[in-house]
Length: 149
Image 1 (cartoon, rainbow, N blue to C red):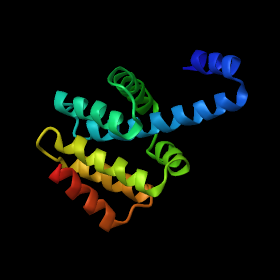
Image 2: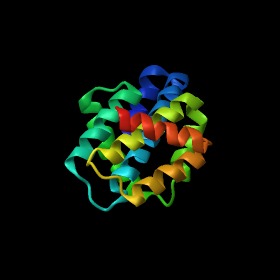
Image 3: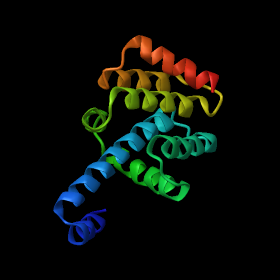
């Protein structure tokens, strides 16, 4: 990642590199929150992993290989993380409210992808919703949209 950032800075200049770094940080934060749901019940089903990749494609507009690579990077970052705040703070800076709602909905889709929403998965989504300033009504609406889709 650091080599990529250095190359971007040399190639594109500092301003464009800063924009790219912000975009990468945002993408990593979104992926990390999805990974938190993926791991919340201590059992990562293949269906959940596929849903994380699909959610990243939908939220961030990435291709499948890029989404899979981002998933692997996010898993590494989550292993090092102390709490959710570093990810939610990044998202609060980078995303509009409706985009945050889309992230919450995709978190629900990951939780539902193995046909069982574990209480720890719901707890993580609720905590993230609070940290992203998503109301309880919006939290429930996202859950219902994920269930209907």
